[in-house]
Length: 206
Ligand SMILES: [Zn+2]
Image 1: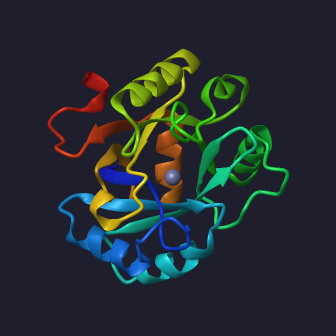
Image 2 (image 1 turned 180 degrees about the horizontal axis):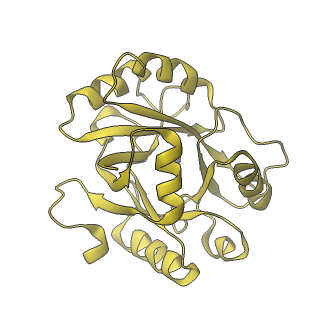
């Protein structure tokens, strides 16, 4: 087991609202001192995943996790560990069930922000709650953390970056091997600590 640092919510140019090129994401991972794992979670698209994974394959110390941010009928949900889209209709439970079927991880994205699903999350069988989103207010993140505690689910962090300067503003410290299965397993087990950029004040201790 290693201690890894991973950003689990990133948009590339395959999201219409993002400016981040796959190649730039790879360069940023190579340059960063310790964040070496990134999940690609474009809006309703997995088109960036294969090409970015291929680019990353040349560098053994970085890892791209394929994923997607699905616009469900109730709000946004992340799936980590898929290169395919779930079958429609995209109800929250259908999307969560798809993730479970293929061994991926379902995460409620920013539940108390715009496009979040709020308390609907309480009715679902999901794997984790995003409790630290780089584009959410402190209050919205704290509400999300309370939700994760109430549901006894692991909490994750993701920058929700749409431009390069937003990459890795928050990330996860995670005990896992540098491969997708090990990381997804660690998320489900809660072997993960959402952390802010300066790394001095783990979010869990605020
Ligand atoms: Zn997003």
